[in-house]
Figure 1 (spheres, rainbow, N blue to C red):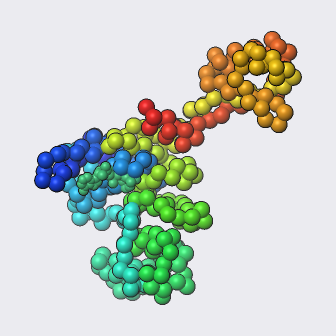
Figure 2: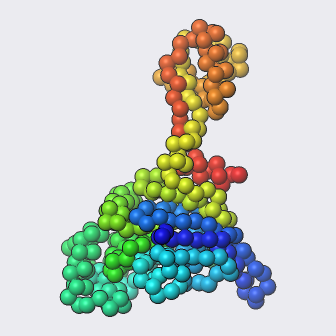
Length: 303
Ligand SMILES: Nc1ncnc2c1ncn2[C@@H]1O[C@H](COP(=O)(O)OP(=O)(O)OP(=O)(O)O)[C@@H](O)[C@H]1O
Ligand SMILES: [Mg+2]
């Protein structure tokens, strides 16, 4: 059984006065295995939040199927396995962290004694110890994000959905959130999060789905997406006169007194190497430069 399975999900919004129909999701297919961290990557307006709202059962959809831990979206059984951190969390300003988490826990009917212990544990997990009595209105963006994560975890859900959890966090905040998410994975939880911050994905996700204009244009294990894609070869060489390279119309760069050629295919690499040998140059190294997630993302959205 998958943690999340979305099949051909379609969603249209109607404009005011019901005149125009906007197709926002054009047949989303994606699946999340249990225990993995799935990165849902896409530019602004691609349909990430809309997809998440459908999964949570917050909005209806035109057609398609969604199952969460084997339960259809929108059912109580499905919801019970889920914890959710919204894109722009808004909590009651005059509560403190302890009160907010306790309040969320009561909604799940967690017994008082158990809830007290759970609240303490969560405050520690998200690094808000010693801040439990500070009112939420005095919280920084990063602290709001942390307390939001704590309240999403109060009923110990197996599956966490986080909409743009890294947005607005500084590098330290991002690193800390990354560590918390990784520790949740170690506890066996499944995490699905959306973002357009590629760097954060590269450092932690198992699988990525790239969404553009309401469609998944690429989905796969991160190591397959990245390691199978050699972007170009970088050939570093020396001992050929610069004037000659210019005369021969060679597109080179210079670094540390050496020359560099970038070749995008193996034929091109062969040709470049032959040229260097023919001209009695000295090859220092040939380095395959792998595609980063950012390169893949940019290539896909340019198509
Ligand atoms: N209730 C609504 N009525 C009409 N259009 C909507 C509604 N909600 C979202 N949209 C439109 O659907 C598209 C996708 O929005 P969505 O919020 O899902 O994007 P997103 O990928 O989450 O973007 P972001 O990265 O900015 O959060 C946008 O063009 C948005 O304007
Ligand atoms: Mg969004």
